Length: 113
Image (spheres, rainbow, N blue to C red):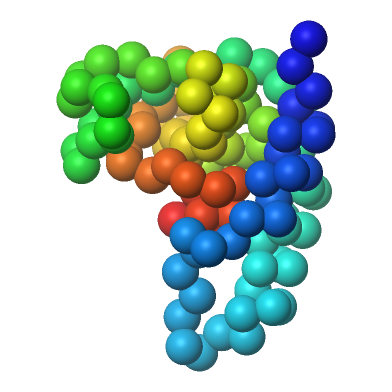
């Protein structure tokens, strides 16, 4: 059985791939992202999306990518793929027709995109 909470908590400590604008306080910005993810956590459920431009490494444009949704808010879905221990951002308001538009990395990076 996959312990999604443990995986997400471990990955929430990673922030090297998060862009922080010069007008932002880095510590506050990362704290706010973490808080937003944790307050929008969901019971994990399978979710798929179509890979769209600019694409994702290892996936052809137009193919389906799937994983487990761990958080969502206003059409942004944080998805974890255990097959490669990677997080992705999916977008769309209809969870039956989501797009994966080239965002992957740490949960904080995906959520900030």
